[in-house]
Image 1 (cartoon, rainbow, N blue to C red):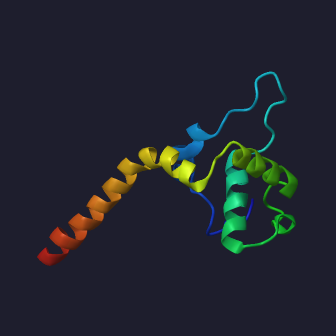
Image 2 (image 1 turned 135 degrees about the horizontal axis):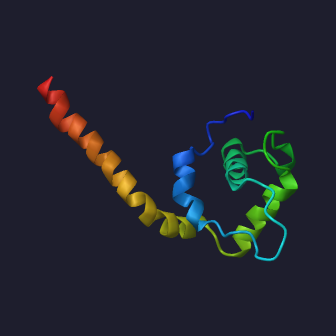
Length: 112
């Protein structure tokens, strides 16, 4: 069992962005690393501000995580690109959460 960090994606969050991750190359070796753990390692790095070599042991090897990070960066996967790609998929989720908060704050709480 691996340690859970505050920067980890939940399974639901991962399912939203999973279709955006390119599949393993056809004809090559099968992918041996879990992409969720690669993403969690990158998020850990960003939130903790540590070096690649200082990734905890529960994540894939830092070289492998760095290779995926570099590959996505060379493909032009930036924060703005992720926003435009993931944004439309997350919009219904965010919209329903905001609506729920609005209804609780403006409708249900005044009634109590």
